[in-house]
Image 1 (spheres, rainbow, N blue to C red):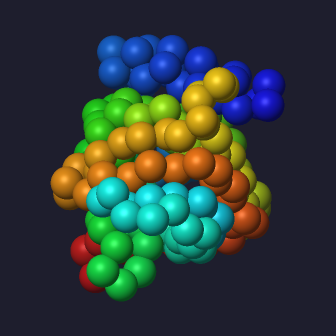
Image 2: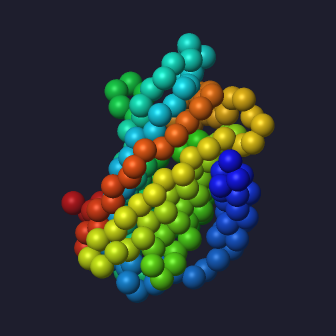
Length: 178
């Protein structure tokens, strides 16, 4: 619970700081694409429907340009509930309409996104010629149901959420150019 509380509080601070930061990604992260996939278990309601348990697959891709700028795409869900969100740079809005911020370190990337009364953190570590990733999700402490509207207009209410193990792939160059 304290990890989630820290994630939510620090995510807000990082979003504020990252929006004014001008530092680009370090050289060892440049001209590389990171692709992270995982699933989350949600007890949720979509567009006012019944609450039900669902497994939501995620695919997150970030290309770090030779100039050190990040380009990201998040694809969430499958079938008629699926959606995609793209962003450029280190800050901006998340898929759920909240703050989104990326921080580059010498050994990886940390991305934090708030969506309504919930948040997600994607942590990527560069490991030799590959990468590893960890996903942390949670709701604001004391909130029974996290409510948000995605940027595509779909409204969600989530009673509980947890992230499964993540896989990470690292490749040279821009995966979006292919």
